[in-house]
Figure 1 (tube, one colour):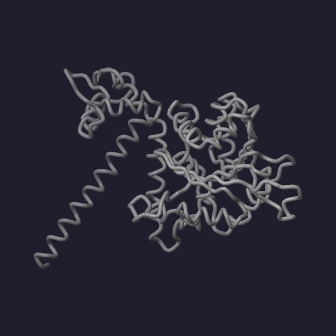
Figure 2: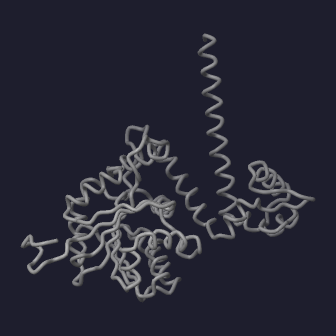
Figure 3: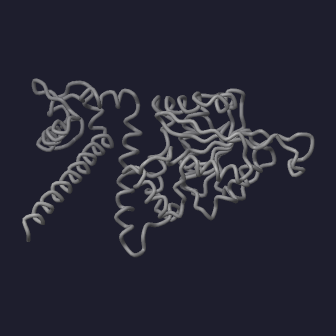
Length: 347
């Protein structure tokens, strides 16, 4: 092998080593969160105390603590271990549950990315196993049981005056592709006049959402139905429809948007999260998100592309709102003037 080839090989192997370390650090953090190990380190604790409370071998606990210290998750002082301030804030702020959801979802995504190099490719989202569906759904939602989840939803909703006004005044809310319904349930907890229906094609995800609603005391206002978003109907119109559009394939989208319009009252609000917030140079994150959703036959739309799609479906007053927690598109079903909407007299 030539010297130049050797240099390239060593550089490539160094890059692979860096990726390996990142993945393994994430696995250690995931285990610490999932097991409750890190929560036991909120206050200074000895190896012996941790071994007793976790029922793990003392030697293993010692090496777990050393590994967590090496990746700056734990600090050590005078024979005691304690969460580093950065991670202590994660736990006390209630964001540790979402951090675990992100890491669990990442583990599923990693396997799906690997599978894309096989001839069969990645399975469509709805053909994945229940555990994989749950992990992916949780990783793109919020935890309605935590202050962090409510903070995220507060920021998203209050940053959009039309959204905030609708929910504050007792909107009837329909969600297409509700999944585990973290956003819907967090919003219902924040807005006591809000009522709604969550629709999803996965019975497993709907069962989890129903159980969450019961646990949160919201089952009298929030209902969940296993149904196809393209054909679901209700005898009374809704004020707001939220469409989790990055789980819907190209083939399904026209019918789902048409049904969202049909289920809304005139002037009602359509809300959709944006996968790729802006037209900008491709990043690692956007490239990976694009790769994954395309494998599910979902178009990875920018905000401008989603605006065009929603406008073509007959929605008006389209705006895009961005903040640190996400980018949301808002649009309205045209209001009626005098005649039936099919009479084309709209504003």
